[in-house]
Image (cartoon, rainbow, N blue to C red; front, side, top):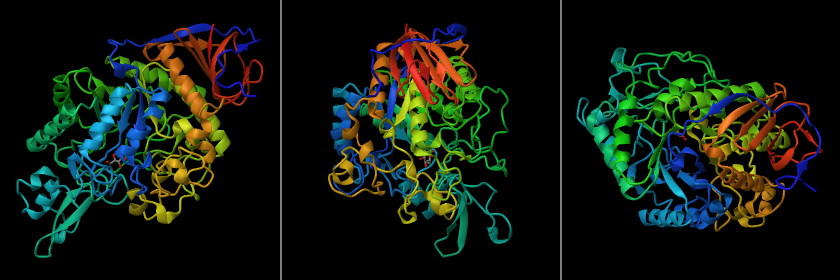
Length: 585
Ligand code: GLC
């Protein structure tokens, strides 16, 4: 028998004197807009549900499966890009910001999706990718067809090379995906031409946001989607749009290697107020003018429209600048995502997050997984450093033990969902999905894999299409058997239909946690630290709920109370390692 998720269990013994509140982290909510406490579920369209049968997920597939998400108990969905794109970076290379790629459907399909979401009470956030376009975008095609110095070229960052014949790139910057951040063009007569900047793949040229024309285009793009009723935007690379004047050379510290390509390391300097030197392509002050401008546009619209920054910026005190009252509403908390699973680290990052965000009147956010990082059911059991964004594969050091990873992931999620603020979930984590480590090399699609000649595995392992039905072809992901990345043969137990209603399943843990979070209003609550459990234990009260997470290696005694939620089966009154409980008096 499992005790997981049972509401009726009373923890019997252990009258430990631990319930002293030692410090209190109050959230100054300054309002109750939906996004301040929302749980937002990330849909990665190509891997969520495929209605057309081509093995790539689509908008109709999402619409069909939305009731399952409503049942899970989330508040909003965020859709990764579904716009017209050659898919060189899975849609983060946009060729038309105001249309749907035929792979994913049509604008009408999007309208249907929105209507279905709205009927289920779910908000819809879409992705906007302003740092770069696809090289297929008409603006870039016009730029390469035009002469150096032309208006068309001024929309991107074209420069002459240096050295004899201009053979050397304009500076020494590297692409986040590996290799140089510059590619040389070829003139119409076949001679080598200017170079253009791409912080990501060579098919993702960076726009020049100093150019007012570019700003005007994006105002129109925002309005296009706001007019179609979206509830907000997730802003891609929101720390990258302005580059330091003169584009000076920069050499990042050795293996600083996150998706930010140099702003964040594996062990973040949480709570530190010191700022590391800022790379000339990230976190330049000028980005904030852009978001003030965008905020004014969102504020013109009815309803609480929201912007969330994907900004890999540390420390948290600096990241908080993205969410000042006249800028964005939220920023992903990557310091939290990157924190090691230890008591002191978790307490520090929670404190630092609440301090930094509430200091500017914003809610803290919490996130453990997304489409760019190793899934937390694997990451939390890695025994070797793995800088985020590099992925893991069969030859990576420190291979995770699956059972330990899942156990920690469930415990970490139960802790996260008890925190005040807004939480982000990534599709499949509610099923306990691990990173797919053994993908055949021939199946990999992430540009990171190609640009590093296979040195870094990249992010395909967290993007494998998710399982819905244990016994259907492609586990019910597609209406056929196809799946753009191969699904592991042993995923049947992870399928949604194998977990639904099954006591102790990861899906039931998430469903129950979300229901209780809402019932006890934890999203708008506070963190009051409890002392006396030892360094390895993260213990706090949020309203009437006591949350205790054991990150250590020995069991700890629990206080008396009624068990609301447990991330793993309990044995008596002891809280085993890598287990989190929610208790009410
Ligand atoms: C963001 C996206 C990532 C993409 C990159 C370039 O970091 O999350 O998936 O590759 O931007 O657009």
